[in-house]
Image 1 (tube, rainbow, N blue to C red):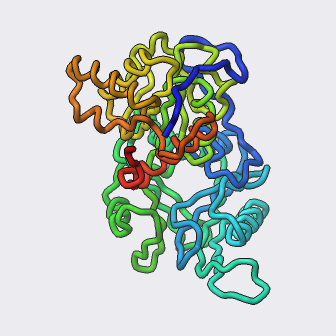
Image 2 (image 1 turned 30 degrees about the vertical axis):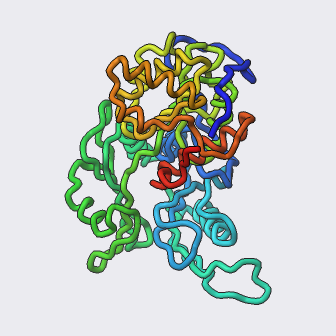
Image 3 (image 1 turned 90 degrees about the vertical axis):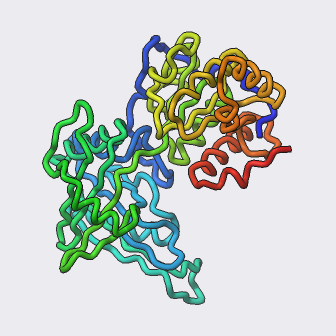
Amino acid sequence: MNRSDESGGGPASTGPAGTSPASAGSADAAGCGGMSAPWPDTLEARVARLLGEGESVVLVTVISRTGSAPRDAGTRALYTQAGPEGTVGGGLLEARAMEAAAQSLFMGRSARVSCDLSGFTPDSDMICGGGMEVLCEVLLPEQADLFRLAALALNEGVGGVWVVDVSHEAPSRSLCLDSLPQGGALAAGASLNTASARELAARRKGRAGLVEKGEFSVYVEPLAAPTILLLCGGGHVSLEVARLAHACGFIVDVADDRPEFSNPQRFPMARRCYVLPEYENLVSACGIGRHHYVAIITRGHGFDRETLAQALTSHAQYIGMIGSRTKRDQIYALLRSQGVPAAELAAVCCPIGLTIEAETPQQIAVSIVAELLAAQAGTLKRLRFEE
């Protein structure tokens, strides 16, 4: 739980920003190995960018897991000419996977690699008790349009399924979409016929993994849009939340009414920075939808009240607001008098963040991001206690 409101203190760095949405700038993150999400946007967008620049990359995907291996099927990372980006679990398992990925990139040949650590020897430095099979898939520049289409579908919230035939030495990847995203065009390897792909995915109960179909072995992976965290307010606390949330896999957007508090120089990890005078038209300007989590951390009660009222009209999965219980009760009373149903207000997490007696911006960020992760995992109700 946060013990103080956002002060809206001075920015760590400032730069020019207009009054319209600004891109977060370069998506390059070479050498960011070990981070769970070293890209400001989706992995698909990162791959499309690299391939579009003429660079071949290796997509490292866990396609099966046994025992207590660290990560499940669907975990992905990249191996580029600059080295690894992302993680598939760390430790010796990841080291073996990345060694294989480096070899695949060098040879230009994909490979399925089994990493088995179920055994134990006295000189071993870890006990895993499991293993995983990793697909080191060489992606070529001619697949740029396919990944660009997938990235567009994710941004538009269009559902679909990745299907990779791994029966042969050279994997064959295809993308089956429920519909064509606005502004998109079918690329080689993409189709709008999802019936067979959905049937395969149903065998995995909607989760990524291998499916055996006769003599064929197919890896299926739902095209699931990542959670977008919209930070309303760009002060000290928001900056720390953005850093930590991005490291934990969220796509981060920022909105503020002041250009110096919402710009790519201050928030280099953000996908988009919005400058909205008086936070007008927040929902439409920021495209708040069902993949959004909204954290309200503005510099004043009036802005908090206004952004909360707007956010409640959206389909955001999560809404949290910084502040004390006294502030919450005052804002809620005013919104109820304006016709906002009490049930909608009850679903808001305020004070935002798990109760850890946080005081500094860094500590408050930990409490907030921990709450966001609990909301993702479905464990928030039992973790969030009222004093």
